Image (cartoon, rainbow, N blue to C red; front, side, top):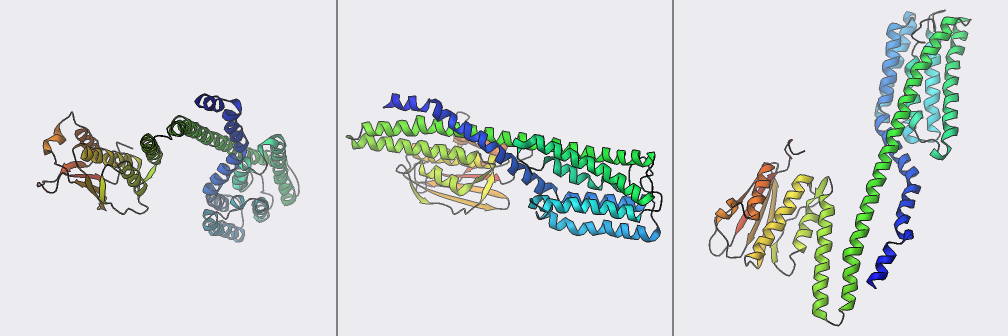
Length: 409
């Protein structure tokens, strides 16, 4: 039975299936990552656009009346910031909403051309008035997943056609506004096209970052899958096989079930401590479950949904394991666990009914409790023992700040 299980685990179909699934999910994960990034960046677009229009209103040639309109248009962009910040921007919404962004850019460029002084539009080599207003459009359009990667060539061709059309659009505006098209207008529109091209290339670079981030997520998922798969085979499945062989001996079955439960609990603790924010209630539950049948837990704290940073969670998990193991090792049969969180600190207290031990044990560098104390002090806390009498047993108190010291981060 065991040999057959091993052969099945090592078969190509079993090991390659999650990898093939990951490849299929790569596109979906990339698109989800990209859309999330757009949602977190898009609020900056109206700020950039408003500043661009404001700068044009200050420095480009307009009549006094036209300059007032341009400056008012710049201030109007402030009204878009709250909506974009809440994820209601055209790119965050997706679909045909992106057309709104294109029309907005075309319209603003047309308004700036119309309000310019006669014969001055596109007569500066640095670019046409407000030309970089549309840079955010090309930045987002360059990495936004509006077409699947499988049609990447069509997408790039279409984007370049649009970008070239925008250059032609500047030339048309210059011709309509000035009544003619000069070589200076061509060069000015060309410089404007260059700025938009830079925004487009930045967008492509961001797109590469999104793909790399998605790929890294897939690698982590694949590694976690393989580790969990190995755990299921080496611990859970082998334990079940052993239990089946010992079904005629209830005592041995119970021992193996207890061992399997402890193994699973230990693995669950590892998964909890792998998170950036560790849920204390689940951590306490798993640590206490390990000592079921060994110690009677007469009191446990209620922690709700409280989470702590990983270094603090690792220390608290270690303290629970060491202190409960120490209580059981030295003859205690019952423990009471309390945990108080106030003034930015966690105070964990474990009182047992065992014979106790001298406080000097905490200073003995050969003992695990001493090493636990050193680890606690590294995080700005301490491990102490409360004076006891013959009836109360040992009372150990661990105090550690909720905030991780900067040197540990």
